[in-house]
Image (tube, rainbow, N blue to C red; front, side):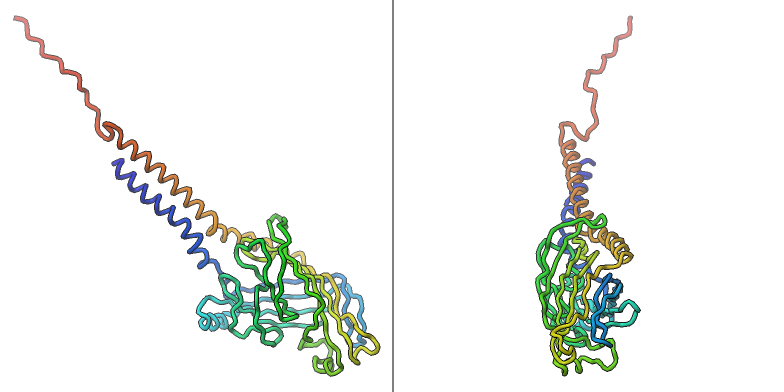
Length: 334
């Protein structure tokens, strides 16, 4: 019986030991993915800020500018793009809506972001665009890959429609989470005018006809939880200007927007709680179960060897017999 039990334990030890790397290196890359129906909203604020009054074409200081960023998963578009690409694809219809202190629209820029559900690499299907202009993204946007590495990544900038490195600047602690801090600086660059302008009568076409151009620079900062690849906080030191042309009169340039944009506190708290829960699911597949199966396999192997050794001892597995001579019968007295 000991021999049979040791063989069964040995089989289980081999099974769990083999399952550990399969779970980490085969199952995890296929199971971990962004759901196509994802929906997220974040509110960022610049307090205070400088904002252009298009009625007077004069910049003025305002107490607050709000930016509402919405990411909505387009399931139908994802299925279509995934079928064309031959892999799991996510399509996010994004909208950045900027509002002044009175709540009125300053600008709004829609995007369509198409990417691989597992690796977050861009997929050039499904009509990816920024403000209606077709683009071909390179690198990431909004989300880092699962198991983010301590290195620079290529990050897509929607304003310039180009990609540039976003630099890893070190590991930090943020609200009880170990995060990787990244920075990207976009130098002053001429960019397209938003197709939706805040004042009637002023359109991108009228601004272009006046010979006026729009310029932009930003310092972008992200705090990224590396296990999930999800940013738990984001900030930008953002500046925009109009330059040249008859629209500005005798001025060479005028500030359109200037401010330090930060995520609102309640959205930071919500994001941190969400990422902490998702982090446990990823760790289950990448650490807890693989290491647990390895330890279990080693324990079962040790137990199997112990039983096998006991079964091989001399006389092991048989009952003990008393080999002392039986007493001879004593003859009855005559």
